[in-house]
Image 1: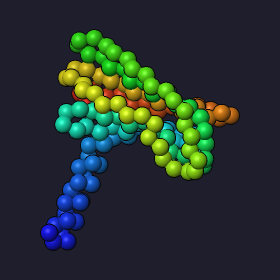
Image 2: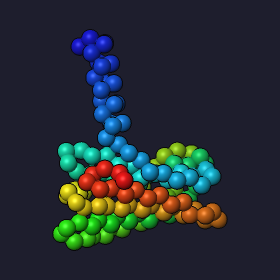
Image 3: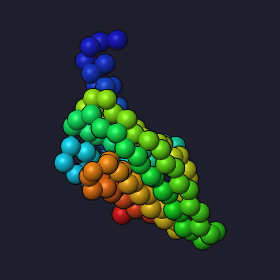
Length: 130
């Protein structure tokens, strides 16, 4: 395969990832939290991410609430965070479908001792951020 063809494929793949991914984030000093949203073959994947500018330890809580014509559901996930050096860590992922007319709201709270909690939220309708 020619170099130009490989570059074109790589550029197209990168563009597709950018187009299909949305992020909600919040920051508090050396800590940023993000909820990343991507759609793949009709399914939605949310990734709860912590990005730290320094080593830190703490905890997170991630909740997902879905509401639609068929009812509602809520799921929660919590755990410890240990970043021994600056960097990014995916805390948890959730993959789900969201039928037409349904909405979802994801919330991430990251708590580091001695600091104010960092909150992120992302709302979705029909698979798109609102």
